[in-house]
Length: 277
Ligand SMILES: Nc1ncnc2c1ncn2[C@@H]1O[C@H](COP(=O)(O)OP(=O)(O)OP(=O)(O)O)[C@@H](O)[C@H]1O
Ligand SMILES: [Mg+2]
Image 1 (cartoon, rainbow, N blue to C red):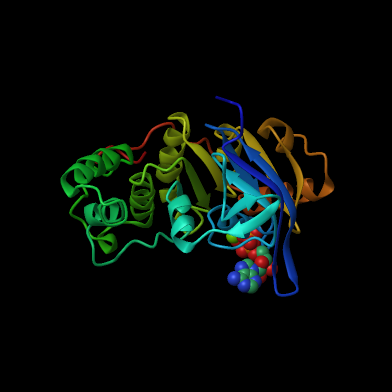
Image 2 (spheres, rainbow, N blue to C red; image 1 turned 60 degrees about the vertical axis):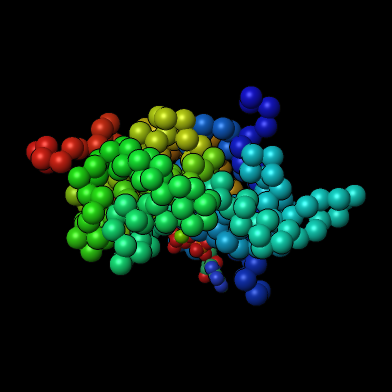
């Protein structure tokens, strides 16, 4: 253990037409670590997450997840593209949670969570449902298995989306601004679930503007701008004493936009019926 990082990206480049979006990203994530990815709009954060998860094909560089070279097989110094089927198998190790929850609207919460393990992994529905109920408890929604997405708040839907990703037993979880589409009062419960997940040892890469999460939960903060990593390090260094002007300006701007101050990340999920205080 500890021999190799769970995620290792080396000199990753990606362009859309003439728009060079990633200009040589290096990033390592140790097993069990939580890395927060910060950066202005358009800096390439989403694109980079999508590259890790093979939703985009990279133009140059390499990405390994748990020792697997993503998307390619290397033989005698040459790269050979994997088949769609092989890539799909690699992607199954990675859970992704987006800003928009993308739940199936005509399926119940339980059906949403069980769909992929049953259909993709071919597991027995009964066993998967048992696990799904446990996952629902973990995200504070044990009373909602029969609900449909449109009967849930945005925050509840996002917690279902997290449970759904966890149902595939991923080695790595990627979060792309999971709370930025939520009403402010719903953000805390989702962050609390993510914090619990971090404490349970899940390896996570999180794009967020939630500075309290970056500060309190992540082990490592990466600031990207213009397709490069400008600065990275422990949250106490990058957030408190940034070395680069671009980082300082960005942090200043985020703090002004969230002028109501940085709240603590709640340390537990509120249970149904518990007062909202
Ligand atoms: N599928 C695509 N086709 C063409 N250009 C794209 C595509 N996806 C992203 N881009 C471009 O890549 C750049 C980086 O976009 P990306 O979504 O990765 O930024 P981001 O850091 O996630 O920004 P935000 O904070 O707004 O989510 C932008 O210039 C964007 O227009
Ligand atoms: Mg984005």
